[in-house]
Image (cartoon, rainbow, N blue to C red; front, top):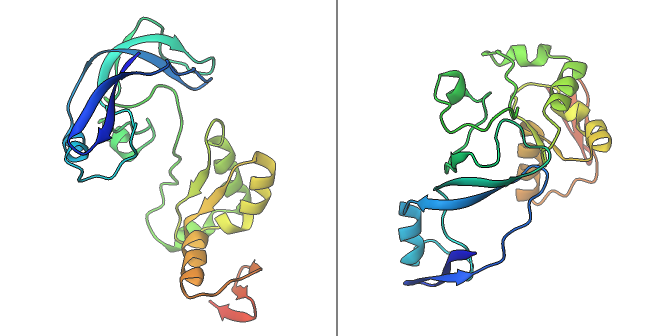
Length: 204
């Protein structure tokens, strides 16, 4: 297939590249029309560093040539657009009616409907684990974005069961902060009311 390839700043050329294989969650689209995004202009000018040989183009229109076995809601021969931003049907934007670029039938987000900080703590560990399992199929990781929840308490067990990272926003932020302060904790112990890191005891 012909592809627009970045060679060096000021030079993008058409080259032959092999047609990619289609995995179970992929779609092979024959491009009929594409746009030139501002990103491409920055790449051409050398303002965005990218690897030489990178295929350029992320907002095409085309026809589905082949679908993966696990893809639902689309058909081979269907004309589609590949938007640069593709939120899920469960995102805030889609729930507000802005779902024109959304994927079909894929659940990426679950919202608790909680708006105050304290109430996140009322979600049980079983409920947190249930929500993670509901969206874990076909994803590379699950992120729990919660300011006062029990994600850290269930992460290790879920990672072992599901085989993917469970990244809790509070735990990841804390871990990153500890590393930036050159603290290298071997064990992180979290209970209902305390946090212990290599002898450092913080109560809340």
